[in-house]
Amino acid sequence: MKAKSIKGKSLQDIRKAIEESNKDGFKPKLAIVFSSVLQDNESISEILDELDIMVFGVTTAGEFIDGDFGHESTAILLLELDSSLFELYFEESAEDNTRNKANILAEQALKRFSNPAFVVAGSGLRIDGEFIIRGIEDAAGPDTTIYGAMAGDDLKMTDTFVFSNRKSSNKGIIMLVFDGDKIDFKGRATSGVKGVGTLKTITKAKGWWIYTIDDQPALDLIARYMGVKLEKQDKVTVIPPEYTSTYPMILHRSTGDPIIRPVLMLNYENGSVMSNGLAEQGAKVQLSVPPDFEIIDEVVNDCKSVRANELPQADALIMFSCVGRLSALGPLISDEIEGVKNTFDVPLAGFFSYGEFGRATNGNHEYHNLTCCWVAMKEK
Image (tube, rainbow, N blue to C red; front, side, top):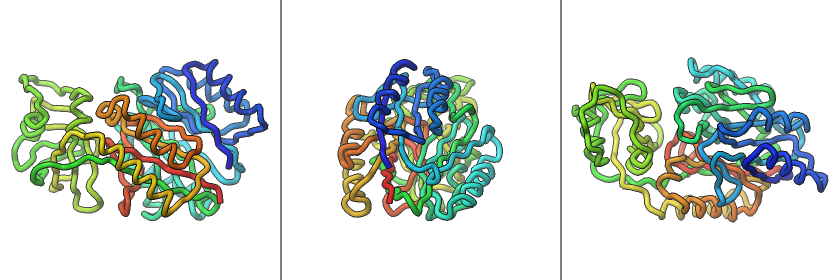
């Protein structure tokens, strides 16, 4: 497998970068495209389609191929590999029965590959990424490889998209599946968020909404801890990004590893708060301290450990980093990106997302928030 990464702020930039990449005889068959909703993604896909390149496309909240991350731009990882080693699957409408529809796609992949490895993305602000992961596992089992993220829209919180050759959806699933017998995948999901205080119990919850914690209105506890001044309102209010990224909850469920869940909305009428994923009644929740720059070291050290113990060499890297990490770390997020890229010293493309899929060290596949997920690929 050969790989090159390119980026640009305009359609002309991207067209030129693709042409330049091909001058030495490089002939990619697959393009992993991370692009702002403000870019002409239909035209970008058309350019790639004309070159007989399959497109795995996701809209973003920032994109990068190195530490010089962009905004309202496009980053592309071009891969030259045999077409028999990968396949792409697309579901245009996955808001309802998300788990079942992810399962159907994964079942199709299993007919093509006996040992599939999944890179997947979802679009739409109402799709629960948890169901995408569980649907894949229902078909392929918990030991399969799953990495990916939920699409973004530059924090507009209006419409996010997945797209491919002549396809696009604001409520869909795009699934890129590789032959795991021919390509090695190794990666990690690392948050670095630290808990503080005692574990508390979610005593009433439904869907993404948490109504009471220790039988007290969840809004009172969360707002007090965040330092949000409550002015009585009778409507749902979106929490500013600086609070969601700085004071997430750590959710300890009945099964699986603890996961990070930011609080996205406050409901002043019933005293509830909305997290970014399913809230399990009876689960334990712990508040957290604001992240510090040690979380960068944790991500980079995990990467170095994988290279030392699991995958000495790679052909390419894909990285999914929560947009909340960008809010928390600011320009220093570039140190995290460069740390991962330089560990393997191969082409990389990544984006800032609205939720991440991956496996922590010795952990299960989870739908994460405020987490950095990366995966290294190496053709055997």
